[in-house]
Image (cartoon, rainbow, N blue to C red):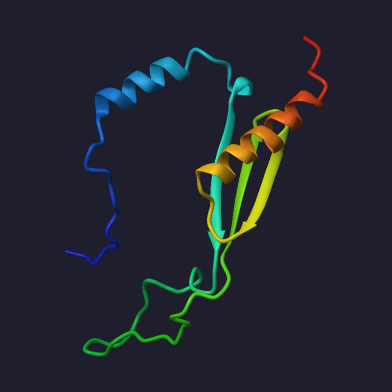
Length: 118
């Protein structure tokens, strides 16, 4: 057996619900979809989780244990337009900031963007 990194999976994961979602979403053309994702960065996010060392020796690396400043970013992307809206905050996103992003950044960018001609 090889040593491998543990992959986390949701306990409530349901293949039936995933299949139903794929059937429902596949009725829309890909260019109708807008995907939103969040990423964050602090002083600890670069730390290695794996390393190599001679047998019987530990893998040690010095890295900061204390979080200083965290930056988080939300971005929305459309297939035919690329990144259409983004927002960066210090700290983490909460419900109110997410709704603000949707209402003020994402929706406004769509309202003032000319629609493509068919």
